[in-house]
Length: 115
Picture: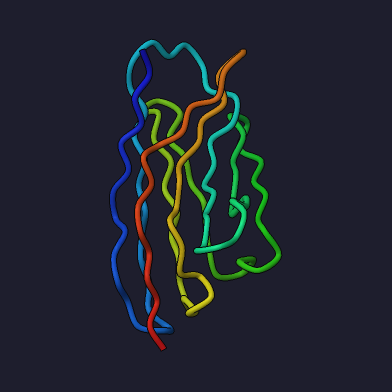
């Protein structure tokens, strides 16, 4: 069994910052990819940022320069630092990890950015 626990969502005014955290536990030997996705109301879930075990990162164009993903391979955690938040960043944010043969998702955490 693998569990993901997310924390750090909330409400913030435009221009503010939030930090999301995700901790994975359970039967984990190695995690290929750890990432954050988001789903706004009425829209499809989209990739926000991802980080490989080797340290490579990727970001959606809409968050480049504002968001930073970081992972701790020893602790099986992945964080998303979100700065200069915009109302269009409002969404439910999901943590996802990719293990050999299976992906796991967190329960989601709401981020609301008011103008």
